[in-house]
Length: 165
Image (cartoon, rainbow, N blue to C red):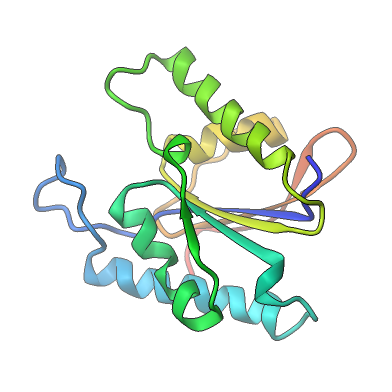
């Protein structure tokens, strides 16, 4: 992969009245999303000479993921791109097909410009699968967690893992 940096974010806490629905964020989740964008600002925008144009935001099509990244749109003028391949495991998918879909999504990232940094917001099954493929490590993320990876020789290495902001 040629990217400079990859951040994997598990979506923030969602409304749970009907788990079968494509719920948006709960009040707790909206607070988590705000804290994630503030962490981003402090981590990169205040301490580095990077600009918003250096970043790409990719989201699962689920509302809770899109809403987790919404603060970036308003605060940093970075648009969110919806990518169906970042969705959680679908009912009709077996485990092998799911892993293959995650691999395909990561291969898509490999084709991006080397000057880009990517933030992906996805789910509690997609992110650990992607992290394992990239780093060889088994990592679980809590809702609203931040996993920052940077390229190493043959694999990616964990730069930051923040489970709660």
